[in-house]
Amino acid sequence: MMYKSLLRPFLFSFEPETAHKITFCLLKIFKFFPFFALLSRYRYINDNTLLTRELFGLKFKNSVGLAAGLDKNAEAYNELADSGFGFIEIGTVTPKAQSGNPQPRLFRIINDKAIINRMGFNNRGADHAVENLKKNKHKIIIGGNIGKNTTTSNEDAINDYVYCFNTLFDYVDYFVVNVSCPNIKDLHKLQDKNSLIAILEKLKTINKSKPAQKPILLKISPDLNEEQLNEIAEVAIETAIDGIVATNTTTTRNGLSLSQNEIDKIANGGLSGKPLTEKSTGVIRFLISKLGKDYPIIASGGIMSADDAIEKFKAGAKLVQIYTGFIYEGPELIKDINKALLEMQITN
Image (cartoon, rainbow, N blue to C red):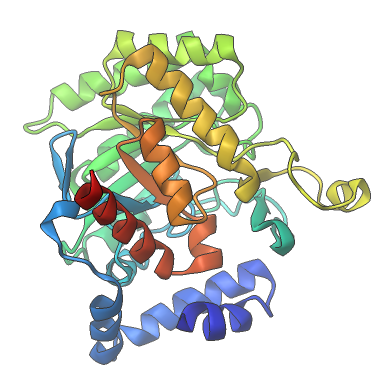
């Protein structure tokens, strides 16, 4: 409860991006004091082997991961691993460093337990991420979420994904191809069936040339209609990718208590958090109905409580990721989800 009673009120007194920088500064400071890491591991890490999950040939200590977006540059994954996560996804990483969209670009909607962001893939580039990943203490499985630079045309996007894939290959355990962020102009068009197949088949060809292959997943939007989701299912079957991350943020504003004037003031950006819960779960159910109950889906979007996570698993997800839930609830959310998963196994 220390996070919600002490740390969150302190961080929420700052603008969201400032709070993010403070959090990472604190994590860097704490690593010089082993007591904090030991305390965090004691409080939040659950080593019960019943929580272990095997998926795409990887062994996860538990089913709860950190979604891409928080540790964009692979700066704090070693420290974040002490919060109880079973895996951490870094990025979105692009070939070249880019500053992203103009500020302000990150907004809390506290009454709705939501966040709106239009960050725009701000990161320091793939080569910088690799330098940080070389410091990996191998506490946890690391995913690499890859995208294209804003200045790269959709026609040339495949080259950006190839660059990131090759650059990160030796330093991450799996890849997520991000073509669904609503904050990069026209990126969503890469979810078109032909574009997707071209990118995924190219990455698969490179993957097959490596001594050991890495799982490749696709991250999709929650705003796809039924026809588009059918195409995603067709792509998954045709390319035989290892799994899908469902979902990214939504451009809709359903479920917010804000007035239209307040919504207009924030303007564009991807909405995450509680208002996304049902929409994301609906996408998972649809895909499972098309791909089968054993198809590997990582649920991401609107997981704000243990009950939300359990609902994703019941819908067919094999793993879950949190981001906005972690911002609002802290490491206790990871602990609660793992506790609920253990209770389910005991009672079933």
